[in-house]
Length: 222
Image (cartoon, rainbow, N blue to C red; front, side, top):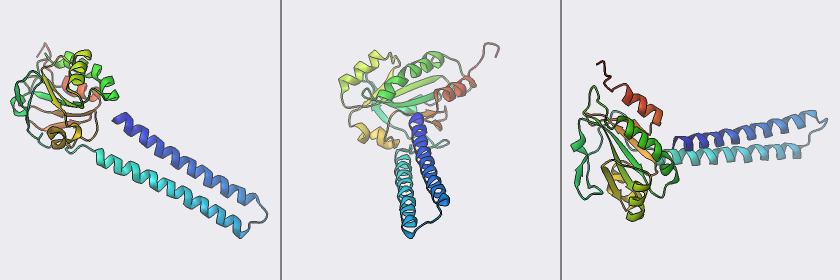
């Protein structure tokens, strides 16, 4: 998502730059001419309006898209509680994990960016899943599959080595209860929750998540 946002900003910047370059070029062409007709002014003004319209349309599209896909909750808010059934058939409640750092990972077996991120999620689990923390019982990942197919979801969990216990399948895609509860409209989306049950990070980079957890681990000397 972060890379997607960067790409969108780059596109907007490129459109603005091209527009600016065009208008400056047209102005310079007219300034070098000995006579400038009324028709020339009309052509230049049409160019201005055309490219300004392009900028407005692009800005409106990406601005509305950003707000539409923006996660529902932000840092400091309490994480909404929910209950569900795990992949092994056990009942699950998010409140059961209070006292631990929890990474809610909304992903999908069909989602290319999610699958490419999964090795990094596995690295987090391997590094911090058995760590001792200064202020928490541990670190837990809860994978929430936004899915079309239960079998594809189960296959992806096995193929990508997602070895943690807490996997929840949501098979009504983005209309699923947990996705709607958290305002998830695109994946991957990640919420990091502290031991008190408050959200402390939304769509953080893996480097940011790792640093946050590392700062709270208990070293051998402590």
